[in-house]
Image 1 (tube, rainbow, N blue to C red):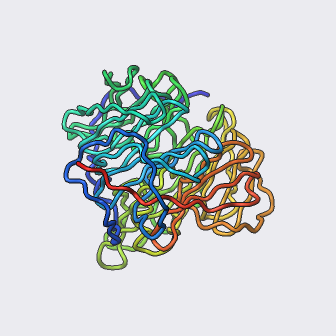
Image 2: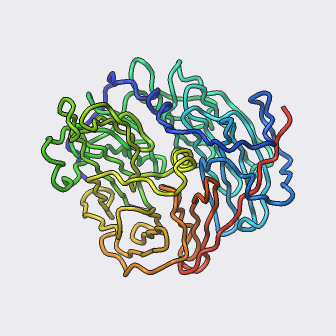
Length: 440
């Protein structure tokens, strides 16, 4: 892979952290009577399991879903109070244990789990890191001192090695830790002048990619753990939305598995005075834009195939009443099986739905009542087959192995999980428990 140019120096960028924090379009209206947190204190857990599961009481959002095998997984729930709770199962959702509770981030929560280790980061202006080395039985907490900035994105590859993307009034800075957040090393601004970084994604200690708003269609990548970043050009999307010219690109590049990379590209045409033809991006996730309806300004939220966390969608959909968001117009999904050296268009079966990866070449697509698979990195797909599935939340499809997968969904403003154990032919709904209040 030959980079087009290197990007090294820290640069000033427009402040996007506050926009991200304000982009949630609604708050769940259903109260949960058992919630009684008087303080944002933590519950370091004994792993007490709820009694009977009452679906009508599960009025919370899904902030993260992470399964390490067919039976063992964690769900991070964000409550109407914006506190979070970690739920854990070891038997494919037949029984859930409530492990950890605390004050959530004003941008959301990030979580990464392995069999014994787990990391949860509350994003935003009051960021904190919670870690476990015993599968969630006990947790330790560290505040993140970000110099008054907002933590926009976090990514960990294990319990010790991680990165934070922080926005301050002076610009953006990427930080790296080798010791589970005890110390952090500043790596400067990962993007060039005029561009904005939105999310960081690492596949290992050296290779990483960015979600960004860029002046041209290129992806940002690093091969030295984030110390330096370079441009990798991606094919131009289809024709720009007429009549306005494209001036910016939302480019979200993420590793699949191995040498695989998927990139979602959305062309952005700026507004022409009060014309209804252009957009101004004001936040991610979800991709939130400001446009004109021929007169006043209107904000719209769109789903993209780059989405990787459902937490911003469950809030919107709980008021909308269904699990569907409009898909960003003009988006193109690109696939690379050689680390970004070459790209081909991934022909996703439909504009809606969610995509997951069993490995670099084997992709799954699931939508409401339909599904398909690809064995060549999304270039070609099997015939769409009917399924008994609900509409997945954008970014929630997690393929554990060739047979097992999970995704999140909404039913009448309430969250559910769906799972398969036969390669996606049959799916089963899994109820989530009511949250048991934790004394302050």
